[in-house]
Image (tube, rainbow, N blue to C red; front, side):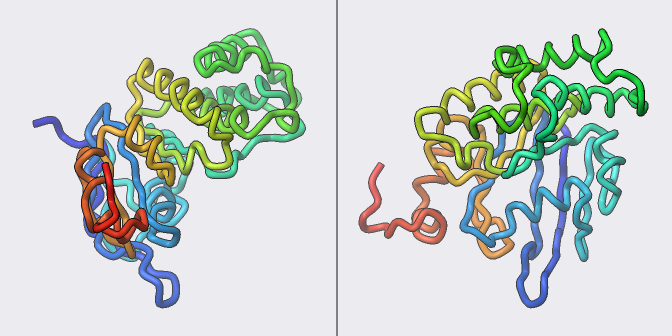
Length: 254
């Protein structure tokens, strides 16, 4: 049996009286695409924040590729091979798309210095390769402020991929994206991640996206994992329909 790439055991954290994680156990296998679903406040983003070092759990442990990363600072975790994208894209609005990605390329290579041109030949080539993978070459010279929400999301994920992760955690990659765009965006990013053999975990509220793109679904409810398994099985579970999706079992349909 293949060892998990990421393994979380007994994660607990509370904010005041609210338990955002109450004994989370989760393994992510290499190459998996795992969707995390659940109502607002269930602890989904908290899990991403603990995994990426933005929060330290009050108890429990997180291992990545066999090494403990619990409570390590975000930069240390990035260097080990974990990156993230955000629900609200974290772009440098005064820069162009290629400059945004190039900043991350340079940060990963640790060779950028103030007063040195950002877009030297090597950095520009690496940034453009990522833009081509994500279908963004046509907007390379556009400023971040000129982009629609779907393009902003893809740019944010391309920036995360510039850090050359083995595991990418995405917080609602289709939130705010027009319905007509969401599947095209997901097709693009999934193809890019598969091509680079990157394992992915994504928080998502759109059940059509979850059903189409996830290998496995983990359901968060009140800081616990209510269910985990293949999308077809999990999304037809009466408890999931009732507590997470908001459908009464008697009215559920396939």
